[in-house]
Image 1 (cartoon, rainbow, N blue to C red):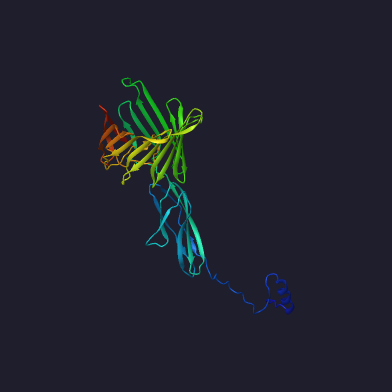
Image 2 (cartoon, rainbow, N blue to C red):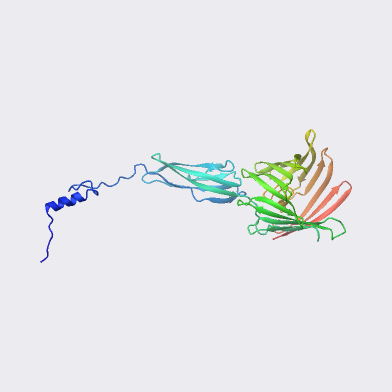
Length: 376
């Protein structure tokens, strides 16, 4: 026979009493209330992935997403949280969640995407944009060598990304004696943003100078050249406007370390971005006075490939001449022409210079210099 357990009334009372720590009551009609949904849910916001762009690009598109449960998104906004300068944010005319950020400099920006629901509940997310320096050249346009003769040439080496890492300048310093050769090597170092930060100069036997680059708000502020023992030789300070070099102040240091401004150079440009005039001022007792000028004209429509040598080593991200000038005139302070250089070029099928001939006239003296350009 199967035995069936039938609890007594007293057992039920004891059981209920033992479970009071788990239940607030033990009544037959008790019902658990379901949890009510949030009346004002928080939007789910995503500002998109972090981005890395080249400063040459100049802008980047930011696109976010925003949703809310049982409601709608009333508004979205993009704002800048931080960065080396104030970027220009332009709303996308089609996608309300997107903006274009322009006027970017080298450095890291943080942008905030904020969404507000129809219940006035807001949420935000942020995206970082890293802007790297444009010190790279595409394969095929990297200048490998400029040769003037068997003994006089310039050589260039690059890393896998196309950044210049080594430059060699060799020349014969005694005409008629090919054994009198000077060879100078420059080694480049870059930071995480691909900015040039150091150039070490070596004359073949020892390091002669080290040039250090300093940046402020994503823009080159100055360079300092010093001996290996730290003694300052020269400082150059740069002023920019609209991403163009407008002024360079050159200071030199004496043996005692005293620094004094010696030269100032002002730069003027054509509408297409080509530098057309350099005005060089020499510091005198009454301040800076015009010493001489360089005027550039007769530009072709082909890319200039040797801008890595801009401003006497090295400002590789600074393109003063997008195109090749056909004429250079150097004038003294009184306007007298000191010399005139006329250039003719031959080009590769892609438009890069492969040969140039310089005709120089200085007074009654005429000279010619031919150069060949070799690319990787």
